[in-house]
Image (cartoon, rainbow, N blue to C red; front, side, top):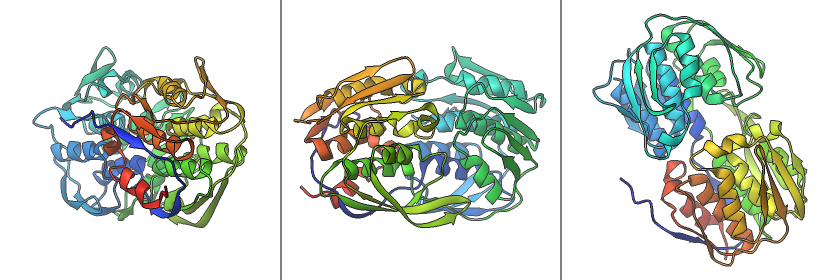
Length: 427
C-alpha cells in the first residue's frame, strides 16, 4: 500500500520554457484494450506511466495477454482471453473497472473486479445495467465494487440508448461488441469523448459516429502501431498556471486537442486567455498540437453544460482560473463531479476557500466569486485526488504558497508532475 500522507508546499512563480506531458491517460487505456483485440501483435509508444493505466495493463496480463517492453515502447501479443486466477484489482481506476467489464463481457469470461476504498465508492451500476441488457451476468455490491461477471451466455440487445453521456459506458459497450464479434448501435451520446471510436477506426474497424449515434460493424482489421499523444488533462494544469501567473510564457509540446476534450480551451478563451495552437497535425486518428500559453488578465464568464462535458476532468483547474477573474463565473452541468475520485465540488470549495475565494455550489452548478486569490501557505485536504493536488499547484503559481496534505495521488496520472513544474517555474 503506497504512502498516502506525503505533504507538499507549492510555491508561486512564472512558468517559462517548454515541456512535454505524459501520454494521454484516456487513450492509453483504450490503446491497451484495443490492442488485445487486434488481428496481430502491435507496439504502443508513449503510454501514460501512471497507476491507473498500470491497472489496465496488469488486468490484461491476468487475462492472458502477453506483453513485453516498457511504457515508452510496449509490445502486445493478442490472444483469446481466459478466466483469471484471482480477482482483477482495478486500484483507483474507474476507466479500468468500467471498460474492462465491457471487454470481459464480450469475451464471456468469469471474473471478479475489486478496487481501493475510493473506487469502491464510485457507481458501477450504470455500466453494469447496460451490459446486462447486452446479455452479461453481472453482480455488483449495491451498485459498487466488488462486482462479479459470470460470463455472457447469449448476446441479447444490440441497440442501446445512453441515459446520460458517458464515454466509459459507451466504450464498455463498444468493447463488449468488439470482443464478442457483434454489431452494435449506441444512441443519445451527446458528444462525450470519442477516443474509442477514433482508435477503432485507425485500427481498421467499420465504425461511424456523429456526436450522438455510434455504429460498429465487425472487428479490427489492422494491427497498426499506436503513438499516444500528450494528455490534455495533464497539460491543463500548466495552461492555467501560465495563464494566471504574470510574466509566464510556456509551450506544451505534442498535446492531444480532440474537440471532445478541449472545453477548457473554449472556456479560458472566453475569459480572455492567450493560448495558441501551433504546429497542428494528426497522430493515429487524433488531432495534436503544441500549445503556446502566455499570461493574460481574465474576466468572469458563464460556462454551460456542453462546454463542461468537454472539460469535466478539468473543472477543478478551470475553477482555479475563475478565481483570478473578477466577478462571478458560473459552471453548469457538473453534477457528476460528486462521484469522481473525490467529491470534486466540495474539493473546489476547500481549495479556493483556502485562498480567500468564495464558492457557491448548487445541485448541478458551481459559481466562483473571483477576484484576487491569496495562498498564504494554507493547507488543503485533497482526499487523495490527483487532480485536486495538481490544481493546488496551479493556484499557488499565481496566488502564493498553497500546501496539500498529500501529493502521492499525483502518481495516478502524472508521476513526473513536480519535476516538470520545477523545470519551468521561476521563483
